[in-house]
Length: 309
Image 1 (tube, one colour):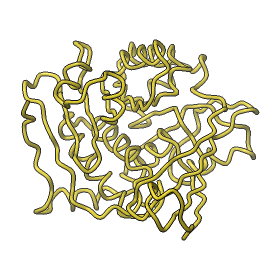
Image 2: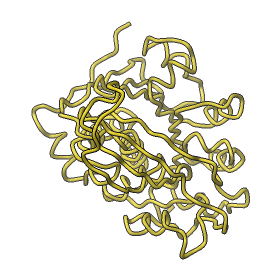
Image 3: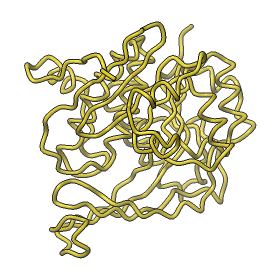
């Protein structure tokens, strides 16, 4: 079946005011060295990453009415379609202030008192436009749509960073590809060891569980494979980690849509995310496919290894 897109997504769409400071965040105070206004949000930035990597992406979450819809216009400018996004006059992006230290670490302060998710009346014909749906924690506001997508055969890639209880549990259960920050998994399950976390998050309905751990790499369990994998991180000098996780999710979702195994998807995603942290800004450093393939072919590309207990 021919589809118009590789990846659909709904979730966080943000406008970010980014402050770069001259001291580590733990110092308590420091001088602002640079100010930048950029667009962000987990799913929105991940979809821009898909487009930058040569994929076809569409945002299908709530957008405001033109001409006030700055977030939607920026997505279109970056190559992400908004043709199927439902619109309401009161829809608006999340507003964030991000402080970035000289080591690339950042603190995000956000105001998310806005309309989330997507329309409950989103047609099945829209969901049929791609093989992969990318969601984040705000999908709790549109659980029925996620359930319909899963029943329709879409792969659900979930980027969850927080929980509000049973609603989040249900979204986690609907995702066949959990791609989570390990910090969230540790807090959610009150366990520490990556292998224990992979076991605890697994279910017969899963295709993959991926735990991302920054400079320590990623951990993976995939269906039909008795081996749990550790994919080491690239050795890079991080300039700004803003959007690195979003880049990882977008690259993973695109590789999945193109038929890659979960391990192949993690390798591609880890490469894209590593490149992204070498530049300032959540979207400005997103790589293209040629750059990723060049890094993956290099002699310093990390090699997956079996995870030992």
